[in-house]
Picture (spheres, rainbow, N blue to C red):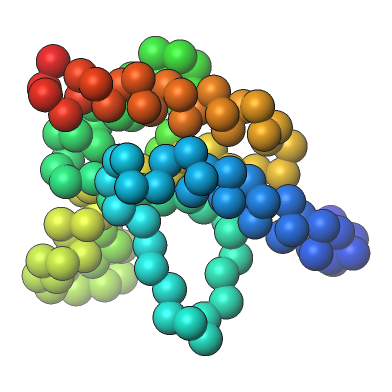
Length: 134
């Protein structure tokens, strides 16, 4: 099944790149922080993670989205150093901190651009009360 999907990989990549661009245009400089990439890195566009200022804020946005039947998910949460049974649980404070504050917005091939707009509108509406802790 995976090998058969390879013939569509460029189409999938291009669509998810455009969906990511739509999210960025709607949300950039308004909420959270976004991953930055080295100029020579390649990006898979498999996820759209946003880093919020606190875990409480992350959970509040996740709840606001869920109330509209939009299911965002935590990203590598808990931090893998705390979760994997075959890895010693060394302290990794940067990873542990960021893992608590990241939320991935829906991003998949069949996602529609108007659905991205609706997701962004929901987040921006939630922004009015999430930041003030209501």
